[in-house]
Image (spheres, helix red, strand yellow):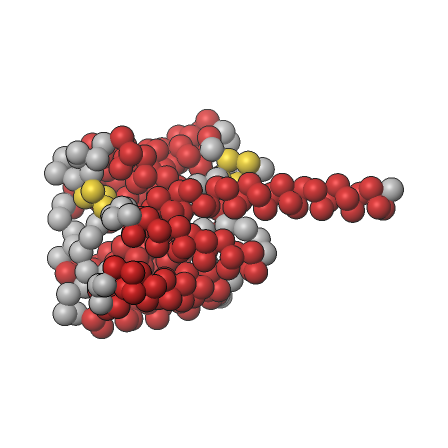
Length: 263
């Protein structure tokens, strides 16, 4: 019997959590991450299955919850619950043709950063000297997104980030290693392996998917030059929905033209 692919992403993101905590002491509060995961699961059950009668696997809700638990940093607990709740609600409220416009956890994090910057900050720790967990998880992650048909998006983002890091280095005078260093942190593993590859919020065409993710990287680079520390989240928040709506509009026009020709 072949393993259910739905279990792959939750297992991978749990490995990222375990490896980052073991290698860099990333996890500061067990209650916080438990609250985020629990809120996400309960909200998805109540809204998706009970209210809207949509039978969805809870793997997606688990990923949203654990992402909030990993990426949000706060001295209080309520942002973990609110972030998880916003993430799940965005899947059911902000969508088109049964596809949500924003990656759920990215949406929840950005709203928290917009509205409560005094109480919330994003994860910023690196792997420290324990590089092997980072390399192992990147390798496993690339294989996982390749099996899901999304490796081209992750690899295009990584390539664009590295090229733009060199550009930023030439502009700011910082070393290239300093500009490319964020890729060594668990935050960027989650971002590149889960957020930008989310099948529900990415365009269907591989070629256009590469264009979109390179645009995300370009917007992020501009935001970084403006010293906006939450650049990757904001870049995806801006580019992702716009690209998806443009793609859906293009597909709809193509279908109408094909219908007129056939008629």
